[in-house]
Structures are given as structure tokens and as C-alpha cells.
Image 1: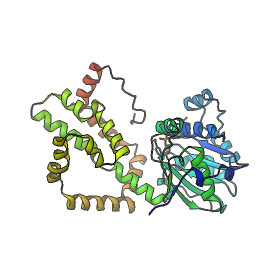
Image 2: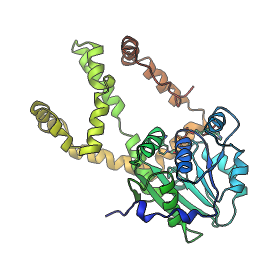
Image 3: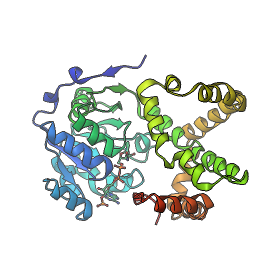
Image 4: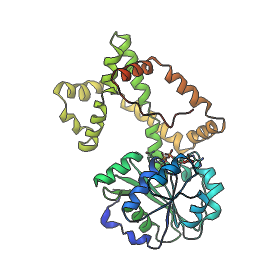
Length: 335
Ligand code: NDP
């Protein structure tokens, strides 16, 4: 049974005399910084001097160049995109680290696959929120907190766990509970979730229903555009994945629980998942993703273009215009 830690297990005094630095003021960086400040730990923000830095200033912080933050802070959160972390670490952080500093990651990837190799004289820990950046702030403000997976990879100070728990409390995570994990466990579980072909299954369902003669708009509303699926996902979080079915009609229960089971091949699925896990653990996925980045994200751009040109996206555009739905700009798409 994995071990959980809550507010009572964490003591902010483990950070006494420490300056906390947050590198990056994006999804996670901004929310975690605001939460820390509201917990009485005002962090120093490290960012390039651009729009994100401007946001930090608007929020009342005084963003500084990244090397300065790496040199002044005792505990440094690395909250920039995973694919740029190795270079930023090499160029702006590594040389500034001092014995006893703590480096905190929000995802295990770069440590697990050796893209970042911190010196032996720092603590290397992880606090990986199981929550989008926006939710990290919202859950803190509501006072409910959000869960995180934590890990201690390197414990130079002999106080790495106490410091990690204090930081977890500061960002509001021990309110709900943090789970002792490892960089490997967090990385494998996270990547496996991202490798599921759910988007393509959704698209195939759309294609089959259109082929059967039904209206794209009616299909999209049912699949996800109404927002019902978000309520359904929340019901799983609140009640449990199967127990949420008690909210559904008996017809829906018979469909989801009995009829759908016939379409499901557990052995084939498990075999496929075993291979996927192996491809992550062995580094096959990582090698391909690294090569993709090295060659300018060409395949990713091609697949974006294919998806944008798919009739489902065109129908979605029409439907969202009719509904007056504001679509959030896809900040992370490949441009
Ligand atoms: P974002 O994409 O929101 O990061 C944006 C920040 O990174 C900005 O401050 C941006 O500043 C900075 N940045 C981007 N490129 C560079 C660069 N080349 N050099 C220096 N700074 C750069 O990141 P997330 O918050 O999404 O992710 C941060 C970490 O959190 C990752 O490890 C991720 O895996 C993890 N995580 C993210 C979750 C999420 O909800 N998004 C959930 C759980 C974990 P500027 O553009 O000014 O340089």
C-alpha cells in the first residue's frame, strides 16, 4: 500500500531560512507561485523578460533572470516545458547550484531518462500534481487541495523528504494528500496515459455515425461538445469509475456494463498495454520523441495538419460558432 502524506505530516519550518525559486511562470509555475505566496512563502520567479514575466509583475512578483534565481534560491522548482528543461538546466542552472540546494521537478521524465544529471551535492525531488495548472490554483483557493505524486531521488541534505513535504504543503497539495512514488513510476504511468488512442477512438466513432447517416452536430454534442462528458469524468473522480454508473439509467447501465463488455478483448488489450509499458521503460518512445524534436517536430506538424483537415474538426468549428462557444486558443499546438 503506497504511503500518503497530509497537511499534518508536513511542516513549513523545514523551509525556514530558505528562498524558494520558481523557474517558469506558465501553467504550473504561476499557480504554484501564487499558492506558495498565500501560504506565506514568497518565491522568487525566474523567467525570460517577456509576456510571462509581465504576468508575474502584474501578480506582484519581481521576475529575475533564470541564472540569478538558480544562484540565489535554496529550493528551485523547474516549471518550464519538459523538452526545454535540459538545455535551460545546462545553460542557466547547473553552474549556479550550491551544496544543499534542492531541485524540484513536476514530472519525472528528464531525470528518469537521464536528460538532466544534477550534481551529487543537491537534493533531487519531485512534486508532480495530478492536476492541470489552472486547477492547482482553483483547488487551493477553494481550500480542497489536489493530489500529487512525490519522490526523493537524491537526498544530499538528509532532509529531502521534510523539505518536499513542506513545499507540497506550500503549494496546497498535502491538503488533499501526496503519495510517495518514484520518478520512474510517475513517468511510466503518465506517459502510458498519454499513449492511449482515445482521440482516434473518438474520431472513429464520429466517422461511423456520420457514415450511418446521422448529423455531425448531434454526434459531436453527444460525444463531447455539450460538456456532459466533463461532468461524467468528474463523477468518476467523486464517486468512482464504476459507481458513477449508479447515476445513469438502467438502459445506460446495461449498455456500459453488459453490452460494451462484448466489444472488449481483455487479453488483447492487456498484451497491447504490456508492450506499450515496455516501450516506455526501455526508452524506445523517448528515443523517437527526442529524434522528433531534433528534426523540428515534422511528424507532429503533419499529424496536426491531418487532424485540422478532418471533417470532424470542420463540423466542430461550425457547431462552436452556432453555439457562440469561445474556444480557448491552443497555446501548445505546433506553430
Ligand atoms: P508551460 O508550457 O506552461 O511553461 C511555460 C513557462 O516556461 C513560461 O514561463 C515560459 O516562459 C517558460 N519557457 C518556455 N520555453 C522556455 C525556454 N526555452 N527557456 C526558458 N523558459 C522557457 O509548462 P507547464 O506548466 O505546462 O509544465 C511545467 C512542468 O510541469 C513540466 O515538467 C510538466 O510536465 C509539469 N506538469 C504540467 C502539468 C500541466 O497541467 N501543464 C501537470 C503536471 C505536471 P518564456 O516563454 O517567457 O520563456
